[in-house]
Length: 367
Ligand SMILES: NC(=O)c1ccc[n+]([C@@H]2O[C@H](COP(=O)([O-])OP(=O)(O)OC[C@H]3O[C@@H](n4cnc5c(N)ncnc54)[C@H](O)[C@@H]3O)[C@@H](O)[C@H]2O)c1
Image (cartoon, rainbow, N blue to C red):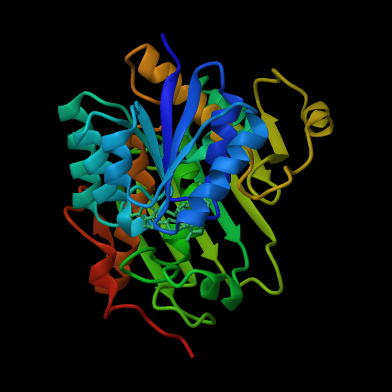
């Protein structure tokens, strides 16, 4: 297969990890375009690419439709504000492009379904950027789940005890808005929520939540607690905060079963803290000692294997690990949590249509 011709749409904070991922997959992929409505941001990302790939030639644009018209492109990644993901992804897929879209893929169940359907109709691949699924220790945990080492799953917990101060929200005014982002559950906590549901089998029966806005001057929630009942009977508990004083504390995932207990912590779910199984197949002390330290960024370096998986999916005409259907699952749990906050009731699945916009008048401010 010839190298896939790649273009980036949305050249802000996260996008340099996309550029790095393309450069790290340079045997299979070449960057040909970068687009941002702020042209300098596109130019900056093109330069980052050239710092990795010396003879790389990247054309820069401020209109993605024009870029798709003028350049020969096989695949795009979309790293704009979340609320713009559906429209841009659907446009690109209708032009026959494969799409990697940042999390959350959309802010409503309907938009997510439309994206999945558009990918199917155009026979292109759609992948959602939940890169933490590729963390080494998360892969190790997933193998333990797949190998049925836990026996009956009982409960799981995702604790996202982070800090996002007003400076973070002021840096980009779309953050914390219902139109373009959602609150800390939808923006920061979605990674760990995705991991929790992936480990617990992904089939949700009901979701109950208490969310609110406590400290940050934004429209959406800065703290949320969620209880999920999965179809297999297991329970998931989520505690998600952007308010932990005075800085990020931890992102932890705990899984407990009849014959196993695993806790993965660190700054962003990349360090094993507990690894105990009845089968005696491995030695906890040795596993704890052998692991690497925290990565240099909370984003980790999972975009590189995520892009690689997408390349393999295209080559072999299979679904990427985090397809649209997979990417929707964590997002849908969060939308259910919002709906539960709004109605004061548990939300049964299938939950039907819901959008962050329906929270505009429903969020609680705790002052
Ligand atoms: N996977 C992760 O770990 C991770 C981490 C941070 C952010 N994100 C996600 O990535 C997305 C972007 O976040 P960010 O922090 O980089 O935001 P940002 O505000 O820094 O960047 C967004 C960029 O998109 C550009 N843009 C907007 N509309 C556009 C259009 N029509 N065409 C081209 N460019 C356009 C903006 O000008 C801006 O430069 C969000 O969805 C966010 O949730 C993911």
